[in-house]
Length: 171
Image 1 (cartoon, one colour):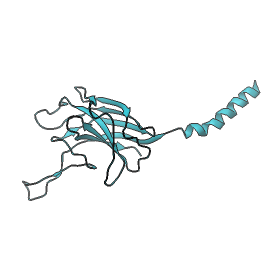
Image 2 (cartoon, rainbow, N blue to C red):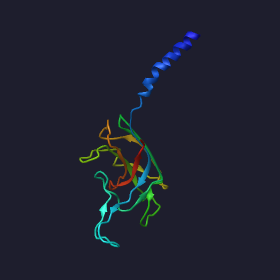
Image 3 (cartoon, rainbow, N blue to C red):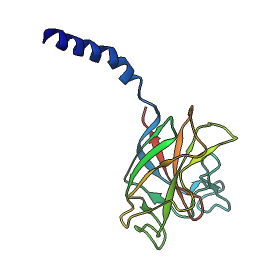
Image 4 (cartoon, rainbow, N blue to C red):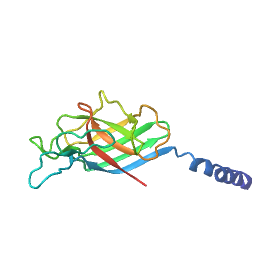
């Protein structure tokens, strides 16, 4: 009995480093930032003749601001992504507080400077927002991603491919 217990204990201790190395996570995200479509308005106050759109790594924003209550995501080395979003809703315009009937998809961009490669989930059908703005995405990113030096995760609109929310990287 003692030998069996000792053998099992040694086996567990020997396999512990293997389990520790089994984490194939490329990036984790916790928290989200809703889009503000305009990043700045150069010119004299109180009116500006031009505005700078809030373009993130080549991806355009929508026409209205959006908010998100919570966002969590994990990307693994086999290009699997799991995203859970809560409260993605319009923060302006006549549809204020609604989801605009939108469907969303996720895009991971790993380069800090152009050219950018967009690793995305299904951008044709996407996932429909619930009336309260909640959504879940469990999908595979294409093209495949194996390394991500400077990850930015955007939640985007299927209809016009604009970004609604950005995930905050968990370090």
